[in-house]
Length: 272
Image (cartoon, rainbow, N blue to C red):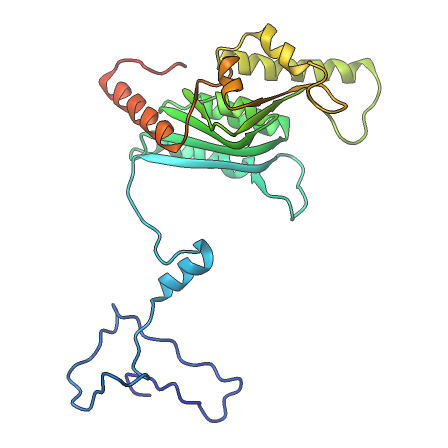
């Protein structure tokens, strides 16, 4: 077949698939052909394979690629722990996040980590495991709650050095719940109390909210229909000292850059 493939039908091939257009970077337009007709529609250069894949996966023709010292880690959907959730659920698997966090701690190129949350919560122990690792990172970290950072997403949001929440984002604070078979013996309730204390202790030690205030929000009646708990929206989370500031992406990145500069200068600007 010639250098420029024709779009005419190929005999004996059904269904007919037109040949792919050549990559303009790999196969530039030839000008040494004296019979070349600029108006010939069979000689059309199209998009490269990488561009087509970007359209299919990202919905855009070009995805900017930059080398940054800040890594963005997203926690979306439901946090999946020891039980596999149905395939139609949007989940964040903790066994996927933990190796990433370990790699970020060891990386010499990454100087700061941005945690973006939009989660409904999920497995308590998996969420606490993620929060503990984020809190123990030696590199500066900031978090940004977009949409929602509910339930066990709260300790993850406050585990960073500085936390942000969008003006329209919300955080639901409620007691720990169990689904499935529960054996009604005193040991079960004692275990729930101890698990509850683990969550409360972590949140109060990584934010400025007091334990008395947080428990009041957790066990408040009338906020949630037929339930107990509190929904905090934007500024409400800041007013009760759970989140540091209302802001968006630019504020979170600028604060992270500031923490990185303070760490380089040795000012000890991290709260952990």
